Length: 407
Image (cartoon, rainbow, N blue to C red; front, side, top):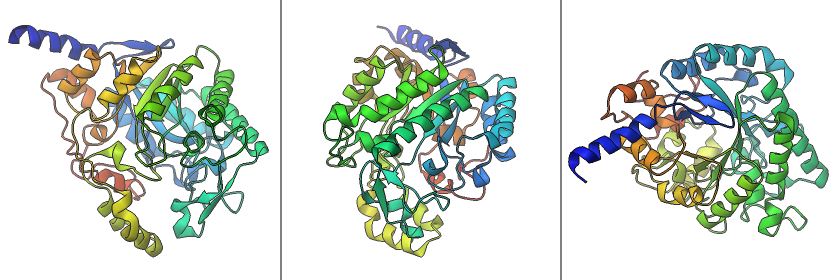
């Protein structure tokens, strides 16, 4: 193929990034979706004007759908007390936020999360957080919450109910789609992973048993929102630790989610609790965490164990592509790629490889108007340097932001 023909071919696929597409009846104006991240703009769990402005800026920048990161399904599902959980008291604030984003032409997804046994929430209703099994709670070290307890069967049933009720609430306040977080070492992932699930009952042991709760949660959420409402699943294709979930597991997990009626799979990776750098790639986040961590005890622990937990993974474009393609070939639902897409060349590749949508995280912090700029410039490359300093701003008073470039 000649160079001219190649350029035309690439441009055709690049244009597809900016064409409308639907997922379970929800029409999106282009293929770009803001990835769910905890913005730390919900003081005491209440959506703020700062949160409105943050997502409003992305809406003005052309994003088709933005994601409100980490909408905990119950009060004890939060990692800390400044995370939202879904309840009636925040209905007015969510209504205002979602209505404003709709007026700007942007759809809104809510990321349904639960921390499981990984929490430093001072407002827990119990002494310890609950996970699939008794174990260490590394995040709670600074607050004297060293361990998590195992859920009883009753606790599991209550958790499923929490997901069902949260889904109904989120649909009622105007969310256009829901993203169930099955990855990154949080509650549902803890059940899925043989590393953290040591149960001996029907919720532990075999792959089928470890997938029982995630599939029951999906069924409960689907029951709450109906068949014509988009549900997305965020998974970790690998946890990146010995004894944890790996790429082969992700293919089988995706097949089960697809068969159970998920509308789209988001192919992420890594785990916040054991190996977060797999999902970030680029500059190591350890120096920034040491710089911003207020607890002396936690800083000591980070210095002691940080190098083994925060490994170096050099950044390169589309670092999850080859493994994500394995899932693409195994399922019939929509595919949403995340992981190292920061240029029109990468967007072109993803469209050519059959992915339906692209989730963006760090690049939108440095370039909140990325969709508009990329549409105007066929040679677009994001300013993001993948230094990962933004990660250390998650718990800053100003919330998550790019430290290199202002919006």
